[in-house]
Image (cartoon, rainbow, N blue to C red; front, side):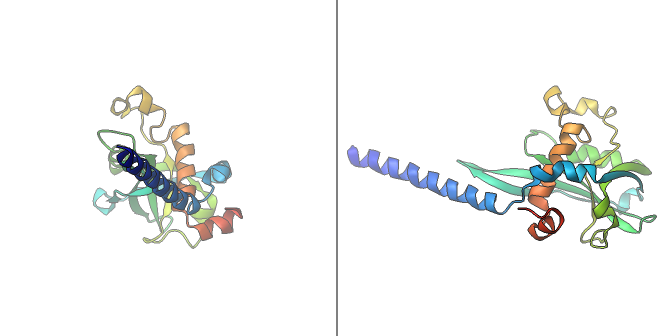
Length: 197
C-alpha cells in the first residue's frame, strides 16, 4: 500500500513539474503586452477603409497556445479577416483575438458577416502600423483590432456575460490589444518599438 501511494505522489509531482516547465516556456516567449497596451491605443487613429467585394475577402481561423493546464492547453483564438483597400494600396486584417470561452460560435463569424455586407468601415488603427512600409503586404497586413462594428444589429448573438467582451466594446478592444502585443507581435519588433521585454 505504501509503494502505491509513494508512486502516486511521485506521479503527481512529476506532472506538476512538467506543467510548471511548460508554463515557464510559454511565459518566457511572450512580450509584456499589458504594460504597453494603453500606449498602443493612444497611438491609434480612426480611418475609413473600403471593403472589396465579398469574394475578395479571406478568412482564417487560428489559435495560439498560451499555457498548459492539467488536462488541456490554454489558447487564444486569433481569427483574421483580410482584404485589400485600393485607396491605401495596402492589405488590412481585422483580427478577432479572444480567449477561448464561447461554447457555440466564434465571435469572428459575426464580425465576418458584418464586414461582408459593408462598403466601408471606420477602423481604429495604430499610426505606426498604418504608415510603416513593413505593414500592408498580403503576408503582413495592417492589423485592425477595432472598427465601427454594428453590435446593436448582432446584440442577440451575445449573452449578458459575453456582451462586455463583444467585439469593439472598450473592454474587448483593450484586451485584444494586450493579447496582440503579448502573443502575436514578434519579440524583435516589440523590443524595437517599446524597448522592453
